[in-house]
Image (cartoon, rainbow, N blue to C red; front, side):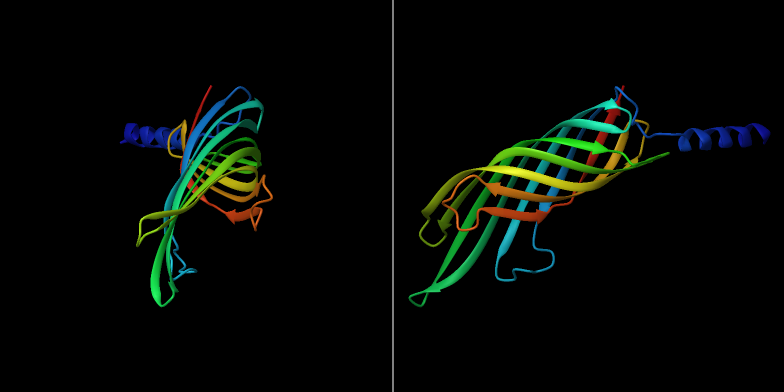
Length: 201
């Protein structure tokens, strides 16, 4: 019985010991996903769907601070209908946004299995938009626009093993299109992602 009690206590301490990997020279990599759908029915007449994927590779040059790169890709579609000359027309917009950011994360809380950080990222990307008339299958427009991307947010990592953590990241994103042809030259949103982070030394 004593042996079992000792093993239980030892195993409990092992699980609760510091998992947080924020030491200097630690390497970090991860992936996050963002499902796109109108969960709050803000656009009830539209059919919104899509998926965003974000990957990161980082390095702790100093304790608690990670610097790295963040390639991302988003593909979404928006289908809507309108009346023209008393004929219902349906159009579908297919949108792709992709690019590469550099980021900085500072881990303000590092306790056992929990990490909390604010983050800042800057980068460049491009947005492609195709608008198709669903009724006639005619391509109405096709645009490709370069963009400057700024992001400010916060995240939480919860370690499920010594080197693997679940992550919730909630960034505010501002995309400024580098063109004067658009009516609205910038786009702003909050885009939370969920994913995994991997740490090793």
